[in-house]
Amino acid sequence: MQPLIYTSALALFGLTAFLYLGGEWPWPAATMLRVLTFAAAAGIVQWLAARPRPTGAIVPYVVHAAALVTLWLAAPTPDATRELWRQVAFLTVLVAAAAPLPAGRGALVGLHVACLLLVFVQLAGPRSAFDGLGRAATYHALEQWSGYPELGLLMAVGAGGTIGLAVAARSLPVRLAATVLAVAFGLATVYLQSRASTLTIPIVAVWLLGVAVVKWRSKTAVVGLAAAIALSVTVVVRGGGVPAIASRGAETLAREMGIREQGWNAARTMAGEHPVTGVGLGGYQREYEQRHLGRDSAHPYNIVLHVLAEGGVIGLFGWLALWTRALWVGVRAADRSRRGAAIFALHGMLVAFLLRSQSEHFLANLATSDRLLLLVALWIGLSEGLALDAARLPLEGRAAPAREGAPVPP
Image 1 (cartoon, rainbow, N blue to C red):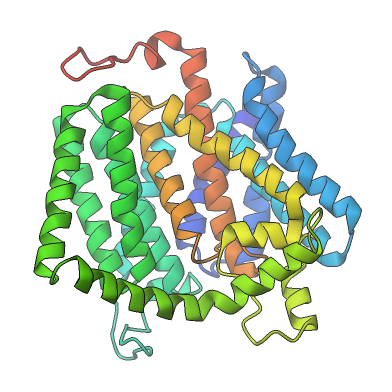
Image 2 (cartoon, helix red, strand yellow):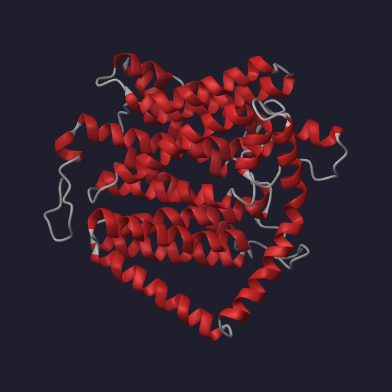
């Protein structure tokens, strides 16, 4: 078993670095992703010998997998088969990241933050060309991701994760470092002029602070919430009052809805006509083109509507099982220990991703979305794995103090 364990761990580290920084080198990205995913699959074998084996924790993921297989059996088209294999890769990486690893999972979480920082550094590239909004179009990072929405998402995710770490960590230096990183990621999001990603960050911050207040009665979180309220009041006053802010917000909302409305309506129509199984896995783009609904057929700009359109009620049920479990782990298993703080940081990353995905679909059935699909699998798997580590080592993972000022666990 030892060779399999180390193979899986090395593959997960390699996959993480390549997903962020690989681009198309040194081999085609798709080939590298397949090789690393296959190697990471060795982690699944580890479950056969692991103690304790997952029991209730695995049920939501089995429900999600069963829903996907049911949808594929209902309409086994080439598009459905491709999407099913994408989801197999997703679940494979998720399970491998949650399996027992020889190295600390905190190192993998740190690697994610480091890679996000490298993406951030790449934003300071040459500005010899500009898009319609005046944004530089020659960043090195744009060669690795499909566009500004993905870069804005990554910066918002980085902010969400570091805010979670700043809230949950007990060490003052760690808190300060996480706060600085959160500000840097937030400024990068503003710099990219990604409105939806910029709006995502304060919402995630309020959510994380609220959880900390309720769960740990954190005085720091209370101060943070008070500061957020004071900042909001200041912005409203300086912006001309509530009516002026509401007017500008309505204009922005109307503009953003105009861009996305056609996709939303198309997805609603497909879901209404096929409420149980949808139009089939991977079928949104095909149906959109066959109905001659317009040129923008990639996705409906909303992850929930996309799931409803392609999977109907069955697909949505499996999707909700997956995400309810992923988010619940982040709230329930987080604490003030090192492991619990890492879980809370991952929770912030997942919440940021899910919120941002309400106005964009980053996991659509496109080649450019495969990398984000596997990144989300890593985030969920690491969160699940850290929680399972706590179950295996209760003294280290569960004896965390509930209030500030108590001794720090090892």
